[in-house]
Length: 313
Image (cartoon, rainbow, N blue to C red; front, side):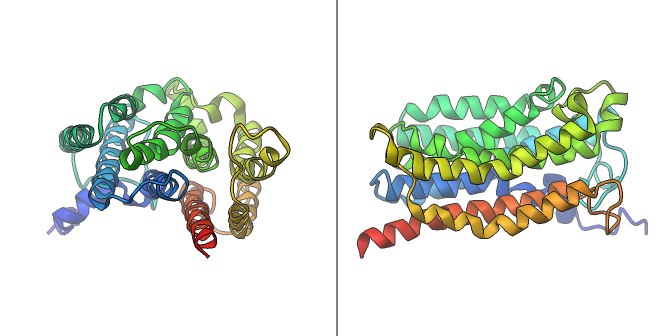
């Protein structure tokens, strides 16, 4: 029996969907939902939340699979790494994964339409933009727009959509307060593109990393990893000294600094990219950045609920 044949079918498809990346898209849903209930004063609707969460998981998985298909067919992704998908491993064909992504895009869109019928048309525009960005992500990233795409989809739109699902209204708070997490999602993609600068240039694929070079990529990564802390501080303290046109972030958001040591660890990895302590330290920097995004997002969401508890007391 061949090695490929011995791999369970379910495992093949799970690997094809790259579930390790899902915190990047699901954390904004948790965050936006929490803001809607605590800051927006909405009643929590479990059914709507579960549908929004499932819809984001399905659409993100679809986008991951479609991206893998395009990368493989363009010759961008041919070497197996610890976070490689099923195509590169030879477990599934590009055609199989492509058809799977189309099915998931359809399923995710159906979930979104059901939510629109439940919530109202304000969600339709947000969802339509999100699906379009996800479907055309593989094209956008060829023109150095991949970072912006994930910044929007797995940061701002995810948080805003979750807010709208609970409140049925638009607001700027879930957009602006999600910027730090959106930056970290961009950092995940940038770490991946930074690793692949050489092959992207060879295949004439333009990413931010390939355009600014290795040193510029280091500086950019630092901004994406440390910038969220500065932005949170600005949102916490600046509104307290300005006219009250926009509410200040609660002081409880200072809890995100518990994740600062992880940011320092990532920065050390990035600086040692040419002489890593362990062979895969730089190769899997994107996965490590994804873990950091999970920590930062979890602390941000916890900050919202600590504030709710403080108000209740």
